[in-house]
Image (tube, rainbow, N blue to C red; front, side):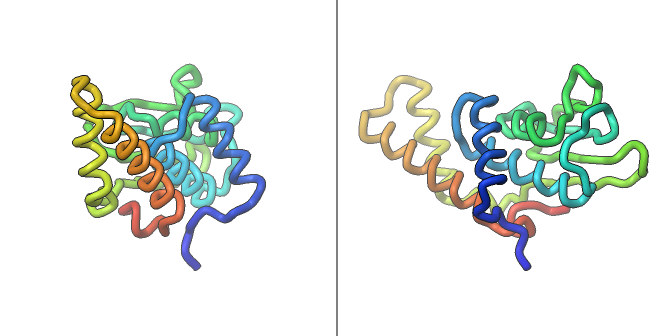
Length: 159
């Protein structure tokens, strides 16, 4: 059975908590949400109230916020470790049980939607985008987010 987001009240509530913490929805937050759910499933835990579960993130992008909200990993507790390698990669492990895994976003998960969206985001940041281009960028962000939320984890990540 594919590991995709089930349409349940619980996952929608978890997503809403991530969005509230982060401030907006975006593809990056969706990536972090998916990887955090994978960590909960693989490590058989919901939330790390102390320091049992550790996440080593290789980026400082939006997805890290979802990891914090759903796993309980945080810089303050010392169980969220940032190693900036510029990769959309997350390693999770359980300190007590000595087991873990690493998720790396597959290059193929960033397709033509991502490429067009990125080009438009650069144009928006430079102040050169038209209203139509800004609208198109928002549409692409939503499409990318929806695809990330609906895709099988094996399609998104190398584990």
